[in-house]
Length: 406
Image (cartoon, rainbow, N blue to C red):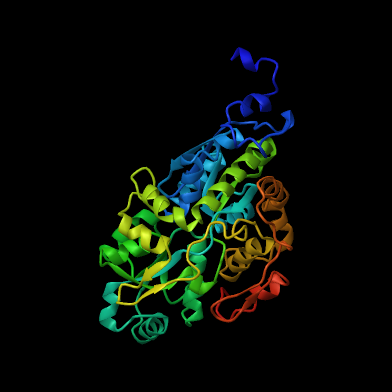
C-alpha cells in the first residue's frame, strides 16, 4: 500500500490492472470510477451472457471495477431492486426501462439505457395440446380461435416488456386481437415451461433457453422466433437509473466498456460453446446444456421435426452494430405501448428517447475500446407484416395499425 501513496486514485487503480491491458484504460485522475463494486442484476436467460462473461473473464477489472452478477427471480424484482439502489444496473427488458420512465409498469422514475446487450434470440411457443386441434402455426391458430372461441391464455414476462410486444405483434399480424380474443398473464421466464406443463396456458413468449426447454421436455413447440417478427430487433439492454449515471459517470462508462468487451468475446465463434457451458451452470441459467447450446449457436428446431440454421440468431456485438442504443429502437417500443393502450397519449417520442438513451456516454466508451459507431442514431427495419419502421413519424406509425387498443 505504501507504494501507491501520493498517486491519483486512477493511477492506483491502474496498478491493479494486469500488464498488457493498460492502454486505453483510465488516463487521468478525473476518469477514476466513483464506485468500484457494481452489482448488476440478471434473469436466468441465455442473453445474460454479457454480464456473466464481463465478470468471469475479468473485463471489469481491466477498467478498475468489479461487477457482481446478481441472479433475480423475475423482472419485477429487477425493476424494484434497481429503483431502490440494491442493484446498480441490470440486464433488463428494453420496454421495462422505458415504461418506468414513462410511469407505466412501475413507479415513475427517470431511467437510462446505456447500451443494447443483444439482438434476436427470443421465441413464441404453443402448448402441445393445440396440436390435437390442428394448430401448427399462426394461421391455424387464428382459425381455431375464431372457430372455437374460449378463453385462450398466453403468457409473456412483463406487461411493458419486449416479450409482450413480440407476442402481441405476432398475434395481430395473424389477425388475432391480443386485447379481446385471448387472455394474457405474466409469468417469470424460469417458470414458463412448468406453467405450460400443468395446463395454465396455450402459448407463451419468452427468451431462451425456455422455448428450447419446452421442446426438450415435450411440453411445447415453436411457431416463431422474435427475429421472425423483426429481424435484428433490440432485446435486453444494460439499464440503470438516471441518478446512478449522474452520480457515477466514470463507473458507468467503465461498466459499458467491460460489457462491450464481453459482447465482442461472446460473438467470436470460437468462444460460443465455452460461453454456453458457463452460463448453463447453476449460478446463472441453471439449465441443461442441450437446451442452451443449439440456439446459442444458431441451430434451431421447432419440436415438430423441422431443423434449420438461423442466420439472425442471438447476437451480442456484430462489429458494433448490436450494442449501439439507437434512438429509433427506443421509440419503437413506445409506439407499441401507445398501440396497445399502455400509453393513453402520444409522448414526445424523440425527446424521451434522447433523454433515456445515453448515446454520448456510449460513444465515449465505444471510442475508448475501438468499437465502430454507426453514422446515424436512427435505423430502418421492415417487420413481419411489411410495415417499415425508421423513426421518422412515430405518432403516425403507432396509429397506422388496424388492430390496436380502442
